[in-house]
Length: 375
Image 1 (cartoon, rainbow, N blue to C red):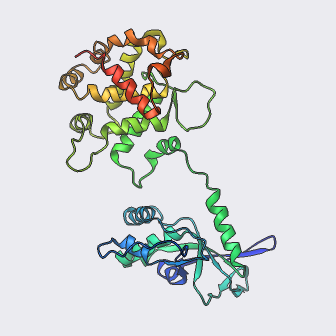
Image 2: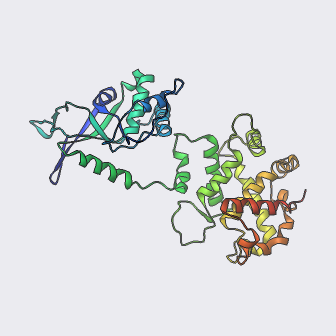
Image 3: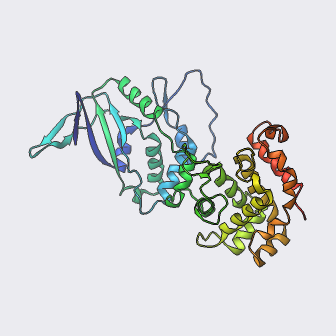
């Protein structure tokens, strides 16, 4: 289809996957004084493909990122019902292509092919993933149609300018918004991540949650008093149940969840967090949610989640929770926290919990709270 906009003309084309791969050239910008890493005989397919991409001082494309190509390839291999490449790739040729419209539909017609391969303005990683997918799964790749937008007859500076515009004006989805959408996403989202996102959502929505409406879910500004970003709380909760690498201990809370709750998002797992935060609320009394104190600030809430992980490492706590899943399990153990309530007063908080940064401050607060946990 030919599209006219002001003085410009471009084309919408649908290619078979194997056809478009024959018509494009993968390029990456190369500086003549940049050293080349020595070739390896044991490198994986993705790394080998990237190493073979043509490099040019005049190219404008960034070098292909192995991690991104691998992620796209993994998506192609695991996606079933959803489309693989729903958005068009952008292609350019400095040649003037011949468009012959159909008699009864002047916007549609036949478009000639350029003598030299297209330059990829946008979509190089998607097509690189498709190239590798086609090598591993030729029968599946043969059924894939790829939408493309073609620009022709322009100076190459046009393609470079378009590349800069596209890649400098992306609005990246913020992390809190991503957590909010995790239930709807299938790509690279583990059961543990969905479970953690569900717990955070429950902490925000459930009437029995001491954090109800105090979590900034979408990451933007809010007129209401918010204590912590959804993404920050998600990271801390997921950290408690995330699978460990190799032979590392899987973590007591992860084992506990697997044994008693699994990753069933219809169960009572959020109650563990509700009741723990309720116990902290009762222990701290009037300073809970008090703007003159920092006990419900993001750094302290993150420290509290880590304290919960430490408490659940105690077999006695786990047994008691299974027998009576209420705030009473934690209340007696953290009752001494009220003795250090003054340390959380806004004036002097950063001196009382001195640290080089937020991560270290979370650790310092957690250690101070754990010192006053009764056995």
